[in-house]
Length: 480
Image 1 (cartoon, one colour):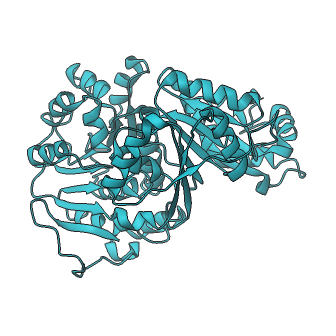
Image 2 (cartoon, helix red, strand yellow):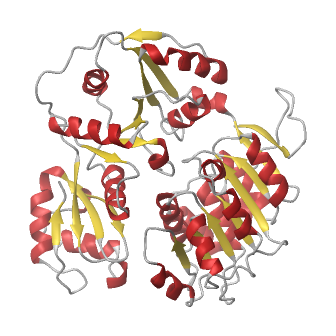
């Protein structure tokens, strides 16, 4: 359901005015049959609202300005669009996607590669900071069709002459609001100025501050504006606000986790130190919890996200900056350990649960000093909030909250020609270990992760350690 679908600058439709929604079937888009079959194989049963509205326009090479949060299907929307426009025989950068974080860049790259599986020789390259620049310069000599990256590294490679953008047909700014919040405006404009004026520009933003409109007017030409209906989202998410009174906040968090027992939970904090302290406290009493914040190295950040997404660590404690770009499809609950002073950010946090028509739970812990923030949320979201007393019994001693999955770390990856099917085959070589015991498999350049059911983790470790993957023996260890 969409709130607005009109040219930028047009007045919003009056309430109740009919909207000519596009059909939700991908087959109506006129895509190549092999491309369409691959989309179906990726379990895209039908188009999401953002895809239904944006894709027909994107495929016609028109600019789009869309308000769309993580999990709305926006990556597939611009991914399908930019891949459809590629000339594979032209070995130059034809599509550029600019993201605010390395995590989001990696996720976007993975999704575009999945979408491009049936298009032989399509090359997608990720260019982000935190990694040596030398290998990236070398990679650029191998003629990538699509480049995904963060502004700082993209600009540095552009200034060195390694990145050439004169053939870019499609430019995407993903999470544009976050790009502006992080101070990347000047860098982005320098990068955009190196692309052809005739390009198609797709701008996606979770929130819609005035700066987004100003940026759009500078870099886009007559874009179609699409804004999601936040009212529709409220029906899918149950919000609970608990007044702490004299109760300890950390103790209350533990009690709530024990009471609601969410299968997966994202806990939002405001500082890196607070994130780590809470994650450590939860682990100490028996919860499977990890912290995600800016002090982590890239390898550790990737590992944390893998374990959270595959069910090995159901609780992730994170700052807003670190959590931006995380896309967990079935996130059961969100906990606001600290209320954000920005009510729009509160809505964005809460919107990470209850996706795709599923129900979600959002819990906010409210100290006396934060009650004015509750008022701001009420006014912004147009809702009435009831502050409940946190009367759940305090925890005593250790808890028994075992994660459903465990993660095995394999010292072999994409550069070793390792594929998901190879890992699955190696594990199930032992007849006792069946495929239904294996979960998500993540493959990186030089290492891989595979989730297995907790009860068979040690057996799977023995099988992979003694067996072979693609005829080779790789070191394997069980992550704790």
